[in-house]
Image 1 (cartoon, rainbow, N blue to C red):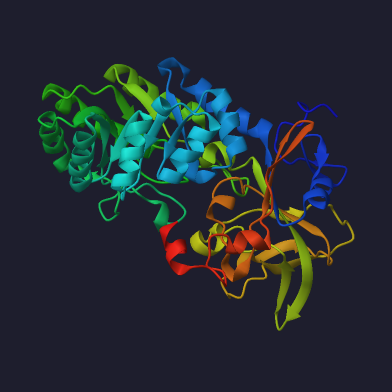
Image 2 (image 1 turned 45 degrees about the vertical axis):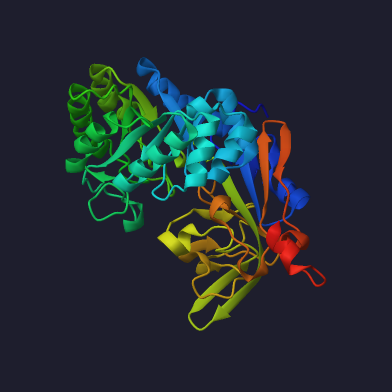
Amino acid sequence: MGSGVLSRPFPRVDGELRCGEYSVVELADRFGTPVFIYDAQAVRRRYRELRDAFAEVDPLIAYSVKANGNLKLLHLLREEGAGADIVSLGELSRCVRAGIAADRIVFAGVGKTTVEMAAALEAGIYAFNVESAGELHLLNDVAQEMGVEAPFALRVNPDIEARTPHEYTRTGHARTKFGIPADEVLELYRWALEQPGLRARGIDVHIGSQILDPGPYERALGRVLDLARRAQDAGSELEFVDLGGGYGVSYDEEEEMSASRLAEQIVPLVRASGLRLVLEPGRYIVGEAGMLVTRVQFVKASGEKTFVITDGGMTELLRPSHYQGYHRIEPVRSRPESPMLQVDVVGPICEAGDFLARDRELALPLRGDLLGVRTAGAYGFTMSSNYNGRTRAAEVVVDAEAVTLARRRESLEDLVRGEWRPGDDPLERAAE
């Protein structure tokens, strides 16, 4: 079977799910469960789809590292030409290790520290996306102390509430912590013109996540481009507009955001503005390319409910519990004889909120069977935890015939690394 024949990630062939040239059963047996498996070719396809749709304006595609910061995937995206959107010093460090050029990195987030600002300035990042007046003042102080200019964009809160699956993922309305009210933006740009530590480089907006309609992006862009023109008239030499990310993907074969449709509405506005376009896709690039594979431990009937208990749960994939997120779940190997039954797929965590699916129609598995949780490439491992003393899962990247253990499964030693041990000198430990 040629690797290019089956383009969708994790196709079913002869009753078994596959990734590249490999059976998912084979990969799970080799690397253990729970395990995240990523299709490198699917990641490339998605990146190129977005790049090609916006080719007319030659965008900086700053991959949103918070979606999935695995170094192997970051290196793959760097080879494709991606920059990065980061929200912490740790993500900056990951990008540097993966070889992403600092001048292709934008730094977002509402609570940047002086340490983070200084490190990003020293690295030479493209811009800080500033989210408050207080942050802009602090950035100016840090830059002056270092004797440099800090390139920045103001993140505008346009008070647009885009439709998303959960209230937590709507970030463009006035009740959210993100961004600066539109009526305060111009005054901050004017103030920055007088500060020796600041250089206005762009303007930024991010309205939410898992958005399926291009309309809200067009409205938000129209508002920030109007502010950009007024800031330029006042003397700010802006060179880019950052539209953020949040382009929706399919979790249950529903419609997803079309890169070409988004580009049709966005490109004419950007071209007319004369500004460079920055995009911050994360989930759109890696979401569909990842699968969480988990093994059934028990099937338990309790009253009117049937529970399929697996070795993966909210410590591996928090989205169902935290966001009520839906993920398709299916047997890795088909059992035609298995009856369809409404079940809860749950994990081993000591929490009633530990579930991967509720009241889901599923071919009833047996103990030891494997289940594949689809569209787990974004906000899966990156939101995983050690709660209940759990070791975090392995991550595997499949690139046609090549398989890379991109992150080994954590050991029990990893769980206590950095903690106090009997015999330690507490003063020495505190000094480290």
